[in-house]
Length: 77
Image 1 (tube, rainbow, N blue to C red):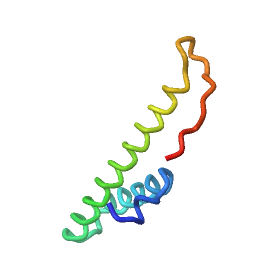
Image 2: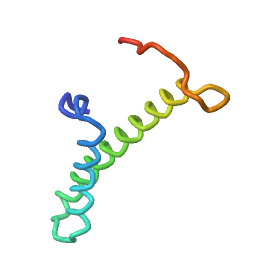
Image 3: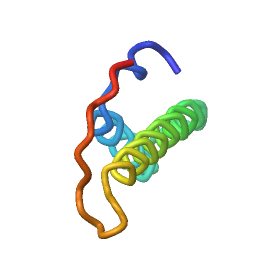
């Protein structure tokens, strides 16, 4: 993934993915461009999936056995 995508927020990546999907669904995209956009879309989907998994891991760490938030310190890294 390029540096630009590495600094992209989840919301930005999702918006770009939605744009690609809408463009491809229009049926007006030449084959070569469709392939390139599809590849870009897969990368964006993977990025979004990883971001959601990380958020889920973070939220899981914050919850205790009674489904209450735990006090925690944010790790810097």
